[in-house]
Length: 390
Image (cartoon, rainbow, N blue to C red; front, side, top):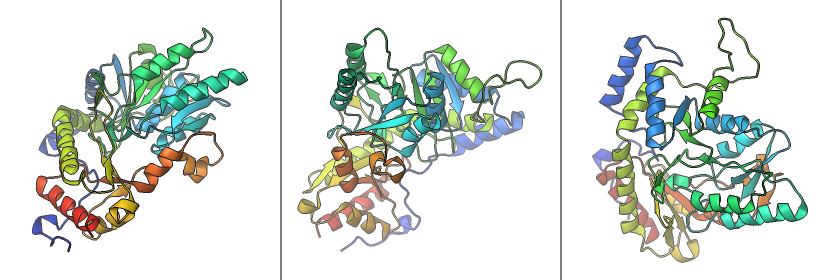
């Protein structure tokens, strides 16, 4: 029998709601009162500097979304029509969408069955196959730090070095939209690649309600991205444009919100890690249940806690668990539907894909927000156990 409802759970429990409070309100109102109601101002400058520091980078550019960061990074790197970009198939659509904005084509690569990030064995096979057939190498590679777990950038860098021929250099743009606060091999999320994209959407670890950022060690790249994000206006008195730009800058008000959020990033990440550990302790021994595993040397932020359910063993499937939670106004959802199974990308090349497809068929994302309290999590666990045990 399902646990009885309790008074504290009358409101809906969301998957990953914004975790904001008086500090964010105060910072936002102070920015409002300052008169900087624009996509420029002291809060924006300070937020960019803080983002660079927390990711171990030299420069940050605050933007309207993580998608904008991916788009502009690839554009400044020269990705264009006819190019191909390697992208993991298990990701949010924005990763592949940004490639198409430039007239390029994503090549969708499967993920590792253990840590769910880009399968570097398949990347190596693709690069070898291109060399054998005399095909151009990809214009870029965009690994994704999935659900708060950083991809294996150290091995990727070694792989690309071994394939370098003195003619082609394959740049890496890290999609770190889901991993702020995580680390791998002692290095923070966002530190790898020519540039990395961050997201501050309302459901991310920290939020600016909507927004994102690009971080990089290349000051010239950051300057060019900042210009393109401001309609590519030239630094003259009148409005002069020598290239097509975009309206992608974050506002000073939202940057103020982001600064307040960033100050509590360690606590927010610590809470998500606590929730992840508690889910594993309560559910990890259940027949047919397996959790996304941390890779060696990885310290994920666990933006979302994810597991898979084998219905032949568990006696129920992923959808049954979603329905059991939804009946009590608790949100859960499948893991990302792979891009190679999305109708919009049905005609693009795919390298592998069976691992990602299996994870989508059986994978479940559980409520993981840093504002989720112990009592609410315990109720979620009890509902899941009741369904798993029939």
